[in-house]
Amino acid sequence: MPEPAPDFALKATDGRNLRLSEFRGDPVILTFWGSWCGECRQALVALDDVATHTSTPVLGVSLDGGEERASSVATSLGLHFPTLIDARQAVARSYDVSRLPLTLLIDRDGAVRAAWDGVPVPADELTRRLDLLRQE
Image (cartoon, rainbow, N blue to C red; front, side, top):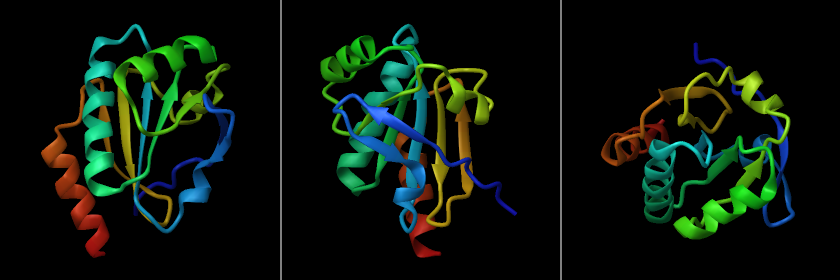
């Protein structure tokens, strides 16, 4: 049985407060990243492309500690999905983040169905898994 994704609420760089559970009913991509992580930047660009082409909600959780750096990176990469600030890294701890990037595919019921730890997700694999989740 898939493990439930811990719910959380974080403030986005655009000022909105977002809660993971608000996205129930649709698959969601959740990714943890830091500005110092080169592979994270690659992963963010690829995830933005997948999100744009599949209309899948993506939530990017910055572990930079502050809004300014995270917002700067998101803007420079041209990201279209929300960048959330985990200033105290409480959400990262609840997900046991040990290597970045960490990307999770969460199903419509809020369960983690796939995880990629320390590497960018291959876009074709992510798209294939999203298609399978939507068929369930």
